[in-house]
Image (cartoon, rainbow, N blue to C red; front, side, top):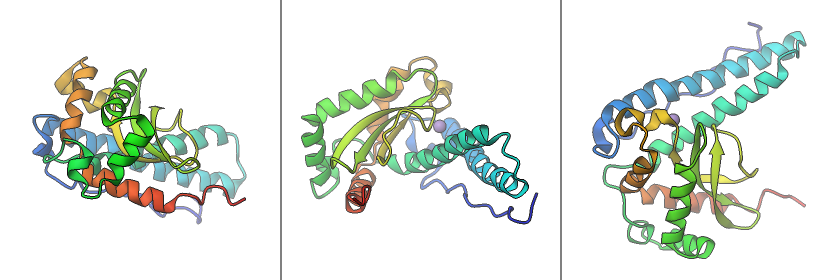
Amino acid sequence: MGKATGMATYTLPELPYDYSSLEPVISGEIIELHHDKHHAGYVKGANDTLEQLAEAREKEQWGNITGLEKNLAFHLSGHILHSIYWRNMTGDGGGEPLEKDGTGELADAIAESFGSFARFKAQLSKASATTQGSGWGVLAYEPLSGRLVVEQVYDHQGNIGQGSVPILVFDAWEHAFYLQYRNQKVDFVEAMWRVVNWQDVSARYTAAKAGGGKLLLA
Ligand code: MN
């Protein structure tokens, strides 16, 4: 490794609850493996890829630039989405944002963007449950329009609009549910609504909205 490398940029965040806190919706065994092994792998992958890119720059060896850029997108996006995912959930969750977020701003934004909470819930559920291979269902703030949108993410990084800020993420990879739900991804997605931490989603919405409008400095 060259002298420009070596600094670990990303670290695995601690879970804000015990492994078993989301039971019976998600088993403690799944959460432990998912956080300690899968998420940790994306953190290491992102840091390793940054080191490999630094080495490529130093040696001016660009033969694998395409693979390195793809790996950076994959691992970094995996790290970011999982960091949001853990905070999006709580054992005391569920219900609707109007009851839980205190301000009603998120509930209003959902109604304006999707017609109603029920229609939003149906769209995010369907997008999550119909991912092909590995992916996520994501509620994101889209800063150009100021709307909320649902995205069906391929792997961790594909099929998204540039600039969109994820505020509620449903992990639909098999590692997120298979030990408990086997092949019943629809059942897992339906159960997920019972652990949604609307206070966290609402705080993310407020922060995303405050940071919006800076995407195009025309
Ligand atoms: Mn995952």
